[in-house]
Length: 81
Image (cartoon, rainbow, N blue to C red; front, side, top):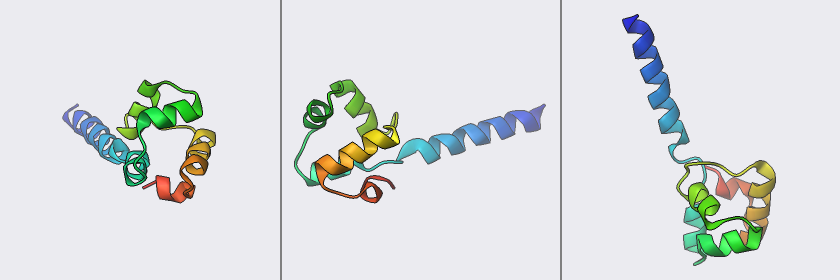
């Protein structure tokens, strides 16, 4: 039982670490002096959605990530860490 709890806790913490900074959307926006609000308007999504992407709380789907890359004139690779 103790081993199971340890494994579950380890997996949870590893997942949190791995998900912590998957994308670099916020970094690229700052480099280009653009805001999450600007990105939301360009994509037709809520500011809350872009905020979650920028904080890495959630991730955009691949189609949206491609649109973001096009808007920011960078490669998808530049948006992913």
